[in-house]
Figure 1 (cartoon, one colour):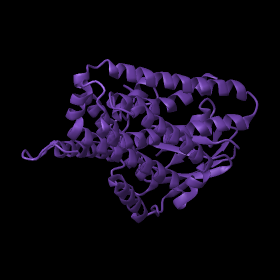
Figure 2 (figure 1 turned 60 degrees about the vertical axis):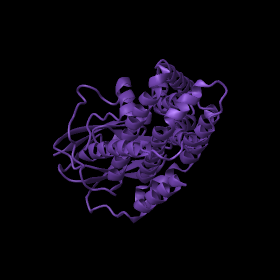
Figure 3 (figure 1 turned 180 degrees about the vertical axis):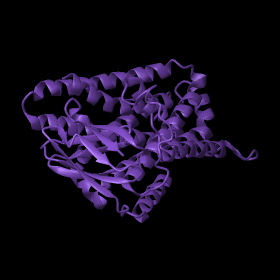
Figure 4 (figure 1 turned 45 degrees about the vertical axis):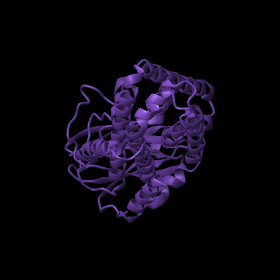
Amino acid sequence: MLGALVIVFREVLEAGLIIGIVMAATRGVEGRGRWVAIGVGAGILGAAIVAAFAGVIAEAFEGIGQELFNAGVLGAAVVMLMWHNAWMARHGREIAMEMKQIGSAVSEGARPLTALAVVVGLAVLREGSEVVLFLYGIFAQGTSGLSLLTGGLLGILAGAAFTGLTYAGLLAIPQRYIFAVTSWLIALLAAGMAAQSAQFLYAAGVINHLGETVWDTSWLLTEKSLFGQLMHTLVGYVAQPTALQVVAYVAALAAMFVLMRIARYRPQARPVEA
Amino acid sequence: MRHLFAFTALAALLVAAPLTAKAADEFTLTIKDHKFSPAELKVPANKRVTITVINSDPTPEEFESESLKVEKIIAGNAKATVRIGPLKPGRYGFFGEFHEDTAKGVVIAE
């Protein structure tokens, strides 16, 4: 039962951290709860579908379908996160000002929300499909299934609780800094996803260079430990990264930075518009 | 709209990329009763290697390794291909994530 709890918790944790950050990043924006809920719902539905077709996906494209699928899901999430951060760089200040006026509807806020709902959906889709497969495996085994299932469900609850903790922790940050902090978190999150996505393309044989391991810090922190897992999801920590992962990480971070600088720039003479 | 372009671009990139892997050394691992056989697999160092993992159990398994940088789900009674390397000489542990207590193994690169 404990094993099941840990496995399911690990999967839910990854998606949960992302949901917690998204909730904090959209603090004070109207309708965010609905969008995040849509993202979670769509993700769970998608996860069940992906799990049902796991065999088909794995065999697609001469056996590298699963790698391409994962690379695609992660890549799409990176693009959405970049879009969100660029959008916030442009409009964040207005939203921060409007938040202070009680009852003012931040209609603009709905735009980056769609991007973030997609990110939440993709995160739940990827991690959730593993949970579904794992729990299905338990059902298929029959015996001892009940205690394992209990463990799995407790794992989901523990993961959800962790999501709440992440959110509460981020909420403790003063309102003034919350945009800056969540922007950084999202930038690092995206860079980590980009590195993972590139590694899936390498595993698929689409990229065939830079596969050498650059360093090994697994003596210090492995990705399997709880803290290692946290660091892996939050900032993309990898104990034994390949050159490709490092390049993808730095490139994504640089692209995010440039995009945010461009978005922040606006000609002086023009009136403010959406 | 913009993200639609991104999706399309990504899809185009994936389809246009060469799908055929280089002819590499091929190996086989079998999962039975949530155990890997052979539990120790010798592969050549400094080469890309292809391992076909055959899951003879009815339940799904995830072939995972931090050091080999692999994460691959294999459905019950199915097989999947995993590409690893080039590896420096050494021992690289792997495990089946869904049955970690029994499903363990090592790739030895030499």
